[in-house]
Image (cartoon, rainbow, N blue to C red; front, side, top):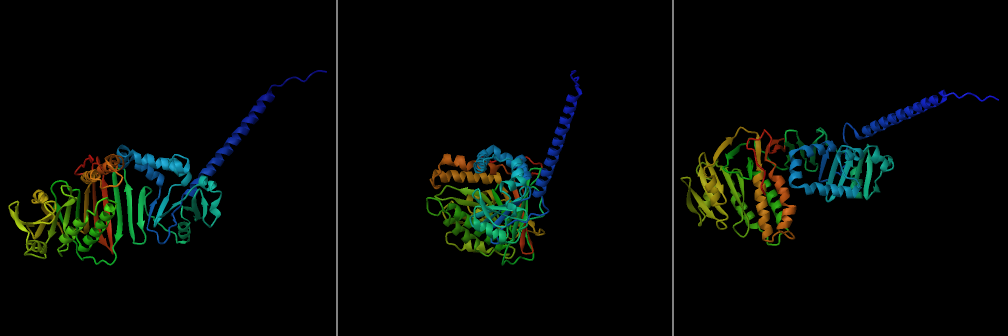
Length: 483
């Protein structure tokens, strides 16, 4: 019996069929990957972001594209300052996220798991976050999108509504936010950071652009406040480099701002190991500004630490056009029995000691019915030749200018002195160098902050920009603070 001859062509056919099968599987896998990717992206996208926020929330922060904002911040000069002077902040944040999730956070991983938009809410110590995740997190939550109630997963309560995920450690927060109407913060760019106080109708939008600016616009509603028909600002060209300059056109705004500053100061000094050191400063402030003059233009040159407690070094200019003969403040000071005349820049003024040489009220009449005041004789010697520009045609009601380098240097000197005196509990100079001074070095590199405020329909509409060192838009080219 003859055997059948061998035909080698069968092997080639089997190889071709195997190649066709593999190509088909690859095409099917690729098509499935494209389908899943598009489905994931569709779940993360939306024309609006109907966030969940309790109706009595204190504030909310919304970032339309957290991943893009993260990358923009890393490439921005502000991010460079943090990496140079305060790398500990970033490393601690990364470590906390890694311990909580088991994964080192990166912009790509955030986008893959949590999506791009993020909204954070705060209510009396409770917080919540709204996200629009894709397929990965939805699968990890085991199909919780179809549920209408809150459940606890990984120690956080969560709920779904309209494709938005709400998570919070507080069950009450989740329930109240889930039952509240949708909260929208729209009309913003992808890299904007929006802050809102819905109860008081206050809103700010911050954007970091490619030129090195940090721009801010927004509004701040004032209730029970009567606005003047016309606004007029006096703009002194202060000598030297004051840390803060402020001009206000309305007395009520000045009292509102001073009350806020007093509250901040009391909270800041509440934990000190000595008696309240700001009471004498507050008393002197109220004595100085209780006279019904027009609002002043202020300049803060720092703190004087030569006495037992720090005293502010302030200069102010009043427009006393409503009192052509003499300012009420000057008249009241002249009637004080301890006041004595003094000569500055060839002009006669008044010197009124209040708390020794560290706080001495110095008054000097100026041209065009204006009055110059300082809280220290050395400051009056520095600013006695100040020139003043009139801005009666402006629509601004507030102008604020902060020199971050000067402010950082003053704060650093103050913290060092307070730590050396033992005023800050559980903090010595080594702790100060590790925890506080790096943040002040970041502040010292931010350049100059200028903010303008304008009255509009019961709101103060604010616009401002933090000009970062090295940008061509700077006129004064601020340097970094050497804290």
